[in-house]
Image (cartoon, rainbow, N blue to C red):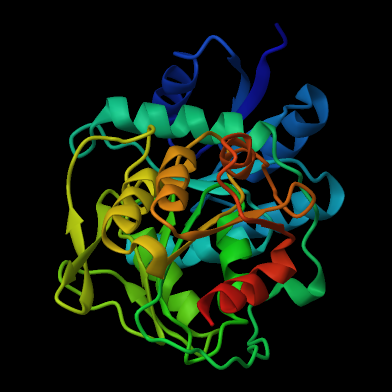
Length: 343
């Protein structure tokens, strides 16, 4: 069995040790080296030729984003950003995702985190990154406002549930920037740690005609709104009379994730039924596949992102295998497919 070769880059020797120990709990991963700063990392990338790099956001001598930009230009390979749970760290990490990083994970802090959950997340994201299609970002990949589609929506009681993982931050930006202000209410689960989801929602809000925010318990789901599940919490659709709202709650990992697409989709199947539209996008694993099957059985419309446009064709592939997908669409066609089902 060929192992996934990982280079760990972090200025903290303790962090390098914790990350290395976490990754090496999985027999499919081998940490081939570590580096305390980008200059050492540059040399080790060339000599060790890792499959994946984990990279601290805040680094001495050269910050992580600048190093990432240079790496993606001269030696593009999958990079998972490791960041502290601070607002500054979250904002910097959003810039790293736009610069070409495929995923992010919270830096393990022994006294604050459930290390078993952090280990699961770190291992899964490195494995997913190893399968990712990496392309150096183009000049046009910087956040900018796209022209939204126009559509006549016949009803206001439709709800769109979207799930994504690796590669999903940029894919969601591409979809939500095209959705018009009169879109049905949208709920998003993107596998992302706490703190980062708030910064992510704020970034999305700047490129979309929708009102996009991190979800809070009890928020209403109304046309023109988009609620992003908070990191480390599950989000469920609820209904009271004719009104939809969300429950945001704690709980165990589901399909190895929190928030979980499976939890959102199952609630949409139960509560939204034929008035709901499910969209499953780029990401590794099967989170959301059985939930999408439940949505289809309840009368919902379902869409999966196609293999060509996925960074990792895992979650959509699993849903397609279950025979529960109405439309398989490229990333640029997903907004039109959502609106067609919403009419």
